[in-house]
Structures are given as structure tokens and as C-alpha cells.
Image (cartoon, rainbow, N blue to C red; front, side, top):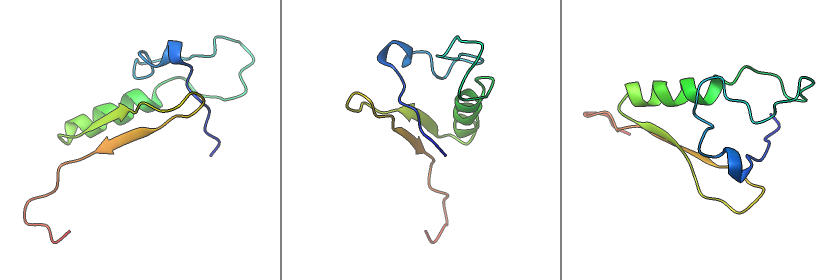
Length: 74
């Protein structure tokens, strides 16, 4: 998978449904803008979260946290 840096101006909106930072009709990356929104909703439904981390310019990092299952040997 090819990762694309998220511009600073778009970082507050990346979890909005259907938000695409590239408004062009001829996009190099396909999609409808649901991936991160749905991923965060799934994480939250399991009492976790998905957040965009602060990174140097030109880099993108996300952190997924999920609670540890009680009684697990992990």
C-alpha cells in the first residue's frame, strides 16, 4: 500500500465521512472517503480509538488503541 502524507490543512477533517483532501476529478488514489471514518467508528465501538499522531511534515501516522480483554493471556 502506498501511503500519502496528509496536508496540515486537512488533518482536522480526515475522520469526516466522505471527506477527500484531493478535490480533483482525476484522482491518483481512488476511494470515497469512508475508510478512516469507519475505522475509527469500529475502534470506538470496541471501546478503543483511532487517532492521527503528530508527526514531522510529510509523514502520516495513526495509532489504534483497543482495551485489553480481561482474562486474556496476552
